[in-house]
Structure formats: structure tokens, C-alpha cells
Image (cartoon, rainbow, N blue to C red; front, side):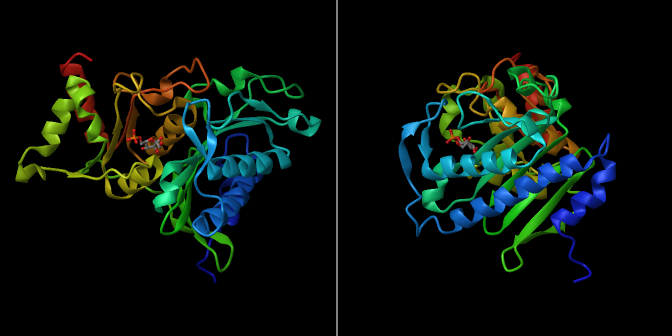
Length: 336
Ligand code: P6P
């Protein structure tokens, strides 16, 4: 028992590392932990209960909402509202940002943005999915309702970010700006146990994750990069390995552990890229930089982008530093 460090203990232990250390962020992370356990329970029985499949309507993205999308959204929203640290949330499943009405929430100093269940179309085929979250200090006055400005902050101002991956095991991975730490859920104990302290992505990797079905409409620089990955250069460990799960959190997590790059360029269907800046790219970008990697839209560091709207999409390249640098070089060479 002496070597088990739970997420709760670790958060409190590291609490003094937070700038302006306070118990509020620790309590906020605790509410995310609780919601993750609840969602994990439902996902694990998805095949048994009537909660797979779509609800027959679309979200603001025009994407078919899965029953578990809405379930996860409701559970995380409720858990965050129940604690006294969050004045509002933004979510892939909510058209607008939600400002919580209780005064105790209006007096709170954080906002949370989330993709409550990323990759949810994979649930029915039993593929790993994930929750992605991003936490900021509000910029509107404490005591007032949350405003859009609270949510449209550049990613470098995040105070914390993380994801839950519901896979062969369930893990919660997060950063508060002092490294990236991974916790594996032990359902027999009902706790997340520290399993990956101070995660670092290899500077180089040999795995690339992209939907090559969109090849025809990729920017020329991306086409050149894919050919580079596929060239036979044994001394450079090429050809690389192509691994694409269709679930950002799962591809990201594998690349974080083994080294690699995830690419979602502009395509015919998504001329600005598919991934959403605020609640997918920014949190993953904070995590990867804290783990020693890079995240860019091909031109700029993701964390420097100034958001203009809640659900805006951007091209997204994230992973091992040397691989991201190579993609940028091909894009710049093709002047894209
Ligand atoms: P495509 C899931 O919808 C998601 O947002 C990411 O999790 C995933 O990497 C990507 O979209 C898959 O998109 O167009 O390749 O099916």
C-alpha cells in the first residue's frame, strides 16, 4: 500500500506547485476525477445497456450526437457545477457557453472547456474514446456571470489541461504546468493510481497518425511529408509506421508514450481542419509541450493562436518535436 499514490493525494501534494496555490484547483480536478469514474462505468457497459448509438440529432458541429456524448456532457457539467470553483463551461455538445447561475458559482474563478466524449462514434465498435478538458482562470469580474471572453483565451493561459482515455484500461492524464502525469484507474479500489509520473514524449518517433483517405485534398506539403514517411531509408528508420485509430485521445496517448505525430490538415470536408481549437487542440498542445513535444497549425504554435469563436477549427499537427518540425518544413517549402 505504501507505493500507491492516488490522484487525489498527488493533486494535494503538488498543490503548492500551482501559481497562487489554492485548494480550488485541486477541488476542481477532483470533480473531473469523479465525473470520469461515472462516465467510465457507463462506457464499460455500453454494449449491455441501451446507451450506444445516436440520439437522432446533431450537435452544433453538424455531427450526429451519440447517447454517450450527451451522457458524458451532462455528467461532467453537473460535477463541475456542483463544486464551487467553476463559473461556467463550454463544450463540444453545447451550442453556446454555459454560465452557471448559482451565486456560489458566479463567485468562482475558473472556467472549463471540454470535449466530453471525443471519438464517440467508435464506441459502438469498442474502440478507445476519451474526454478532453481545458481549465482557465476567468477574466470577467468574480461575482458576475461567465462571459464569452472567459472562454476565448489563448491556450498559453490555461492553468491546467488533460484527458481521460477509456481504453483497455482507463487513465487520466493531466498537467498544471509542472509536467504531465498519468493515473490508471483501479476499479476494484475505485481510485486513479499514479502510473506514469512526469511523462515525456521522445524527441523523435516513427509513427504517423493521419486519415490518408483524405490524401487527394491534402496540402502539397503534407503530401510530400507522407511520401517522406513512406520512403525506404533504413538508416533513418523509414518507412515509418502508420497508425490511425480515428480517436484523437487514443492516437495522442500512444504517440506520447512511444513517440510519433498526429496530423489533421485542412481537407475538402474541413478546409480549416476538423479539430476544435478550444477544447481539443489547446489542451493537447499544453500537454505535449509540457511533455517536451510541439503542437502547431502548420504556421503558428497552437498555444499562441487567438481564438475568435467557441467551436472554431484549425489544422493540427502534434507530437515529437523533430517530426512536427519536419512537417512545418515541408509546408513552408511548399509555401502553405
Ligand atoms: P476522421 C473524432 O471525431 C475526431 O474528432 C478525433 O478524435 C479523430 O482523430 C478524428 O475526429 C477522426 O476524424 O475524419 O479521420 O474520421
